[in-house]
Amino acid sequence: MPGKRLKVIVTRRLPEPVETRMGELFDVELNVDDHKFERAELADAMARAHVLVPTLGDVIDQRLLAQAGPDLRMIANYGAGFDHIDVQTALSRNIIVTNTPGVLAEDTADMTMALILAVPRRLREGNLLMQKGEWQGWSPTALLGHRIAGKRLGILGMGRIGQAVARRASAFGLQIHYHNRRRLHADTEEKLQANWWESLDQMLARVDILSVNAPHTPSTFHLLNARRLKLMKKTAYIVNTSRGEVVDENALTRMLRAGDLAGAGLDVFEHGNDINPRLRGLDNVMLLPHMGSATVEGRLEMGEKVIINIKTHADGHRPPDQVLPSML
Image 1: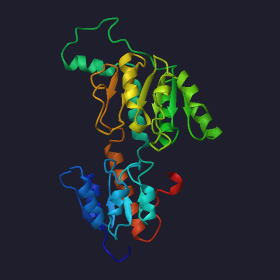
Image 2: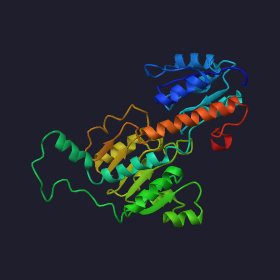
Image 3: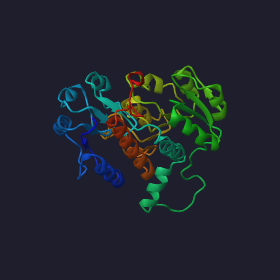
């Protein structure tokens, strides 16, 4: 695409410095009022743009890609996950897809650790008591939670985020256990003091807290189904800051309401922002609006990666964060 000022269409508001830099480099079209694009708007953008910059909420499927204009040659996703994009179809139409990996691990691990602390120690209930002005003073038996030091933490998915969670959890005295498609190198295991479980079922039966850090792929959809959730102790907690589709949300909700699990901290949900209403209002559940990666620093770094990917491709080189078939 050399010699031509690229038409770049961005589907949501990005941090001001990112939008400003894009405007300097490209013919950029911004979403000034930050509304969520309807499918017709996405189709129109894909018909006109050289580069589309979507986010997690933009589902780009085979039907939309079939309507893409002849000039669309790149989907520069603003986000690490790309399960909302039909990458195979994009590649078959010579449209490359990029993402923004590696900049969100620490932020997401911070939020994961916050939930690992908050749910067993009943922070949600304590905060509500204070907000409602109903606290009657200290009592020896009020809001008794559970100590996390010495407990077993199971990490499902030991990539960048999972390893960042392990480092933080070790500092709080948690024993680290993990299940991953591939076992970590022995040196990494030793550094993290992590114990590998080849069998997910066996790990689930033994851990006190489960941190879900696996991506959403066809093989991980409902990986934590009703059968597997029932393997866990009734005193166990689940924290999910990765993808809601990995957990059968209906089964999880039933077990939390029945007391078959002690509690959950959820930052992601199976159907996006359409959350199971039976999860709301449960004292033993902390719900967050997908804010695990929501830091100023992280969002700026994501924007920088998007710009580098676009500029590199425009200069005739392979973008550093291109999504390859082997990653699907």
